[in-house]
Length: 182
Image (tube, rainbow, N blue to C red; front, side):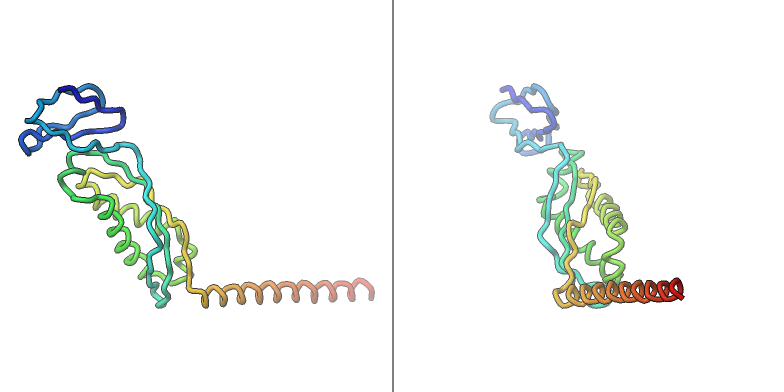
């Protein structure tokens, strides 16, 4: 029979239950009842967003971090036979790697070094997923949520800092006006 594989997709052909070949885009001939074409794999870049993960920082605060992974299947055979479910594997690997990276940072470091965290995650994930025929192109931290009590303390600290700067500016203005009028 004839099998048409659309652009940016790949199919795995098994002959009598064993890997035969990878179908690329275009027209392909398969032998009915002997060859079986597994579900087609999408070779385009894909995006997965993971639910917020609880992560403990070096200073023992629990943060909830949302991550987004951009990846692409580069080897259809490896993605089919090297791992059972590459999406859940990427999610688990992201969670554990995120916990390792954030676990060595304080809250302040975590909030100010997103790019470093993204790059460390991408490097580790790309190394681990390479043998599965997957390339991780980008990792983004969508949001970092500290606990509500810490958020309130940070807001009070920022408010106090603004009030302090305003008081200093007012005092300097009064001082300058006394100097100019004298």
